[in-house]
Each structure stands twice: as C-alpha cells, then as structure tokens.
Length: 254
Ligand SMILES: N[C@@H](CCC(=O)N[C@@H](CS)C(=O)NCC(=O)O)C(=O)O
Image 1 (cartoon, rainbow, N blue to C red):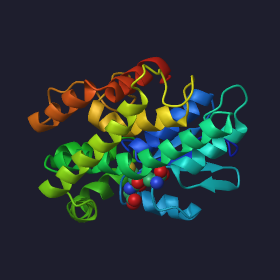
Image 2: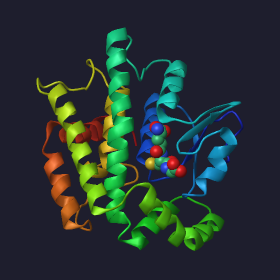
Image 3: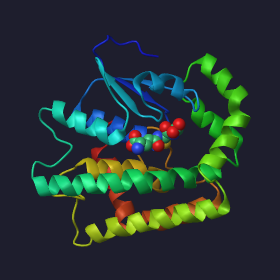
C-alpha cells in the first residue's frame, strides 16, 4: 500500500508483469524514489481506471498520470539529471525509440503469451504469482475470482498450442533483429551506453531468458516444464540472450 508522502511517485503494478519491471528498472537506474503498489488482475483496473488507464504499469506523479511504459520512460527522461534513458543524438534517439516500440508491441506480448500458456496449466503457480505483494483482502478476492479470471485470460491471450507457436515465432523474429544489431560485438543496442532499448529488451525478454539478478523471477529452470527449458536454453545461447543476462548482471540495480 502507498505509505509515502503525496509527492513521491506512485507506481501501480502487477508485481510479475514484465512491462512493470521495465519501468521499475528505469526508475531504479535513474535513482528516482517511488512507491510501488501491487495488484492482481483483474482488480488492478479498479486502480488504473482512476487515472485513465486499463493496463499496468501506471505512474502517478503529483497531479499527472502516465498509463503506458514508453510514456513513463519519456517522462522520466525529462526529470533525470545525470543519466538519460534516451541518447542525446537525434538519430540514435530515433533508433532507441523504434526498437523500444518493437519490443513493447511484439516481444512483450509474445513473451507474456508464451509464459502464460505454461503457467495457466499450473493454477497454483499463477495464483501465487498474481498474489505477490497484494493486500489480504485482494488475495481473498483473487482466489474467489480466479476460475473466471483465468478463463478470460485464456481467451484474451489465445493460450492454445497454436497461440503458443505464434508467440515463439514472434520471439524468435525479434531475437533475430537484436542478434543482427549485435553482430559486430556492440555492447549496447544503440550507441555506446545503456538506453531505453536495452532496458526494454532485457525486461520484456526476461520470461524467456530467466536471467540472474531479476528482482521477481528466479533463474533456476529445474521447476519449469521441459518444453520451456528447451526454448530458454536455445535463446540464452544467442547474442541477444547474452545481452539480457549481461544487462541484468551489470546494469540492474538491486
Ligand atoms: N503498452 C503497454 C502494455 C502494458 C501491458 O500489456 N500490461 C499488462 C501486464 S503484462 C496488463 O496490464 N494486462 C492486464 C490488462 O490489460 O488488463 C505498456 O507498455 O505499458
């Protein structure tokens, strides 16, 4: 629950959401103080709708609210002093924003659908994930609504074997784009510094890489279904997968 004073930015999240991890990482990397308020789907909507949003993350700062992760990063970049999320050079900035959009629109959707496809087959896992950080009252409501909520999510995200195959295909396509950008040994996706593109890629790919130092997910694969482990191991071996692991190791503040 929000206990900070009213000037402290409030980040409304579902704890396990990778779009929320993207914004959390940006806030942490800029050293911005904030309070995170976790909710479970579909109850998050009760809180996001107050600010005109449907999905999480939502960032509320004084009388302003930002309801999309890229808008949040743009805003944070305007208040940052010594570090930037976007390159100063206009052409590099354009490249970072274009990559971020591709990751938001294609990679984040695909990795979520892929991870949900397996998680939904283990109801206790998903209930535990949704319950992270939420109040006792919401935990009870979440348990009661769980059968209906999972049914809705199955339909909304097309959590079928075919839907999962489409998701894997989309993930591989985005990884190919990233592998091509890294083919001359670049350390970062754009220019010579960490940018929104690296943070977004690493956060949104974290379901399929399971890097060490992730604040929510464990990097151990032993409890995951064998089919997931095959894909994770394949992607970890790629330059893009190595980038995700290195970004978490070197740039994800505790
Ligand atoms: N384009 C949005 C996507 C955010 C998004 O899809 N969030 C998911 C969590 S992973 C969500 O809130 N899903 C529940 C819903 O849409 O009601 C962003 O970048 O902020």
